[in-house]
Amino acid sequence: MSTKEAVRRFRKHALDEKDHSDVVRVGLKDALWSDLYHHALTANWFSFTLWAVVFYIAVNLFFALLYAMVPDQVSAPHPPSLPDLFFFSVQTLSTVGYGVMAPSGPVANTIVSLEVLMGMMINALATGAVFARIARPRARIIFSNKAVISDENGVPALCIRIANCRRSVILSLDVEVALSRLTVTHDGHLERQFEPLLLVQAHVPVLRFAFVLAHVITEASPLHKHTIRELDAEEGEIIVTVTGTDEAMGQTVFSRTSYAFDRVMNNHRFVDIVHSHPGGGISVDYSRFHDIETHAPKAGATKEPVHPA
Image 1 (cartoon, rainbow, N blue to C red):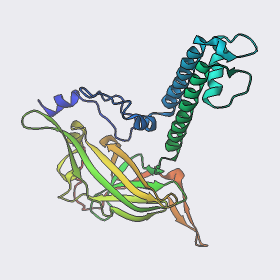
Image 2: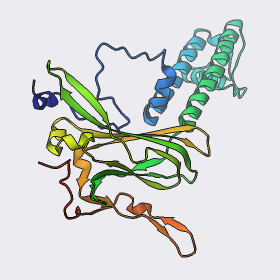
Image 3: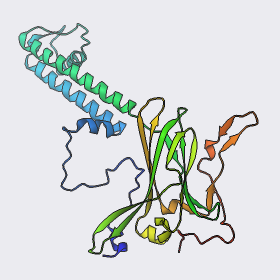
Image 4: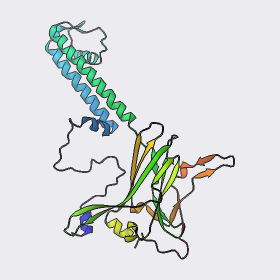
């Protein structure tokens, strides 16, 4: 099988997408109940809220049906209907108890006791899940929407700009950049290969605002061996992962993105966004964070390794 034929069987998956529901996992069961906490954290807010409401209604409807089996043991101003018993269950589950309806028999009191116990556990679990979703550490790091290959000093370099959007700094930032390619082995099997792209500075002690990651494309670089056409045929992507510690929270934060080669611009560079004032202050123009400008290579410079041919 040729690379071109193999690639036709696969869709391109951008790693910066958070939803991977388009990936079909054959032969692997989704362990919903044994991994419920993970599902509660990774579901989007609409799904999380929808399932929480459905579960809440189902639990109260279940107990309303139990109360309906002994309607004479639930005191009320008038014979309780199913909606009355449903809202009685809501009040019991939340331990509100307005006093209009109350259990008056041993069976109803037993059901109420079980519901109150379940209500305390459900409230605790729901509070923990909502808090965990809100308090989950996230790095508010933005990546430039394009990567550029510039030739500042006669040597081509792949550059990617990142920035910290919070006022608190990120400490001990570690960055890893890799070239991902979908290749076909000699026996016809598809294989995803990852080749590291060494950075000029892969460790940033403090990220206050913006920083440019640079990979010099020397003869030893994986980018030196391939043309853009070859990388496109192999679904080539540049994958960037970032790990650091948020100074304010003291927690490890992560972020990632990827660049297909239609987002890699040759002979371009990022415009300056950091400016100093005469008084000593510094301003960062985030409105121009993604802006790039053409930058022709110097006369006599070597031909760029990553070229469109």
